[in-house]
Image 1 (spheres, rainbow, N blue to C red):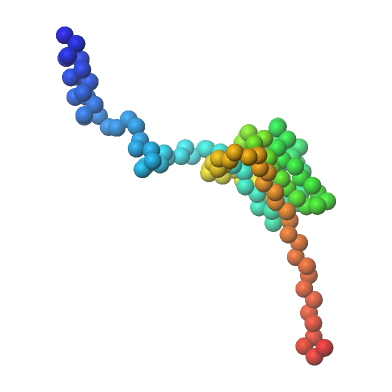
Image 2: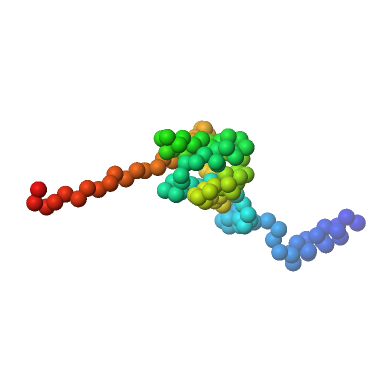
Length: 124
């Protein structure tokens, strides 16, 4: 009689908690140690290049003279090594995932230099 095992399964399923999520309506909770993407605070960066030397896939390019920092998102394996070795701690691993894209893009960041302001006398 194959009918009785099916009844047993139905009754236990009615009593038990749901085993799946209603995904589009309830977003999946993130694990606390999820590494999603790299973020940089350009104001703090000294452009030393240690992060580009320690990157195992060479996805980071730092130009010390031009004061620019660039990361290839398709080349990054999100290992977090660059954030660990940064002496100024201006690199951070965010928990948000990189948005999907059909084209290869590179995120560029450059230091903004503020020209010193010169005080001009009012009567001049």
